[in-house]
Image (cartoon, rainbow, N blue to C red):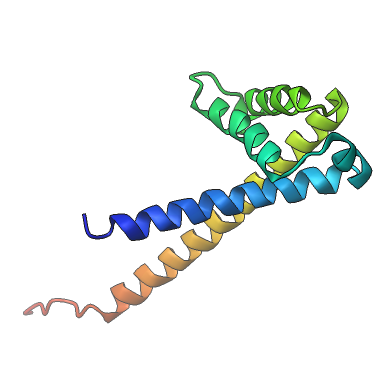
Length: 131
């Protein structure tokens, strides 16, 4: 119970950074004049990305979530005014970058835990055996 405020803060920070990352990807793939013409602000990107994130709760997914995520992304960003090509391109770019980041963190975390477990195993004295 006493860790709840800290965990809530970390969760909100994580979601906030996720939406900022979505904004960077959309603005990086779609030209700035198109974003200005459509008046795509951070609130619109949060709405569009949330639709795609909700698709991850669907009981059917493609390999690594491909397919349903991009379809939901394209649908929500299409409703916000992006062309089908831009919506699919931004969805695919976001998903590939996010998965690459996740895999890199997973590999780094696994390497850290493996090294830590080896260090701890070396520091534990072995029981003495009598001949």
